[in-house]
Each structure stands twice: as C-alpha cells, then as structure tokens.
Length: 163
Image (cartoon, rainbow, N blue to C red; front, side):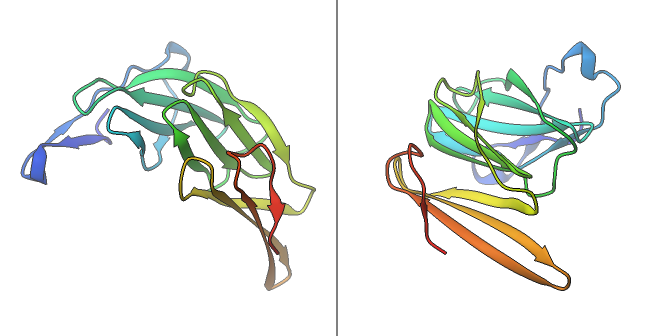
C-alpha cells in the first residue's frame, strides 16, 4: 500500500507503512482517515472498504505495526463524515451517517448505541477528556441546515441535548 507513511522524529524522513489486508479486501478500494492517538501506547486508524465497511487498525506504540482488529459492516454507504474519537486506549466512538458505534475493548468489538431519526446525519464526535464528549448532527432543508449538539460527561453512558 502506498497511501500511508510514517515519519522519523522531526519528520525529516518518511517510509511507507505496510498494512495487513484481509483477503476479502484484495480488490477493494481502501480509504484511510486520520489516525487517532488514544495514548502514547495505542493508536487507531479507521479505513473504509469500498465505501461500505469500516476496517479498524490499531498500533501499540510508535514503532509497532498496524494490526487489523475488526471490520464493522455498515448499513448502506459510508458518508464523508466518518469520525472516530477515543476516550481511553480501550474505549471510543465512531460516527457515520445515522449511526454511533461504541467500543469498550480496544476496538475489537463495536455496537450501535444510537441511531438518529431519518433526515439527520452525524457530522462528528469529539472528546475533551476521558469522560467529556460532544456529538454534532446536521439535517438539510433545501439550502439551509439544522444542527444538533449532544454532550456527555460520563463517557457516553448518557447524552444531553445542547441544542
């Protein structure tokens, strides 16, 4: 794969990173999203497969190889708003379209914890700490958009509508 590179300290040199790809993905179009650093010891890299599934790679340390830990089959086509946020090395959220997935085991297993009503689409998820996070959703009305924001202060167990 020639689309993912790792730099030396300071970025003076760059080397391609090899990803182990599932044999079922041999002819697939893979698209990577920005990696998310959970800690200095664990990194997450979401990759979409033919625009329909999410493959999640994890690297344990800056020199460790990226390892495919799971593939998340999604209902329908993925949107450009795919977003990943990691609360701790073991827990995080992925948003795409109307779905919010959560993992509590280092990204190995994901479950849909929230599905928006039709017409709404998640625009992203962001964290400001281990327990505090924000979800943003949009809905189009002709040439205008409605926005909705939810906040968690307990690691995603509950979300409060903030408008």
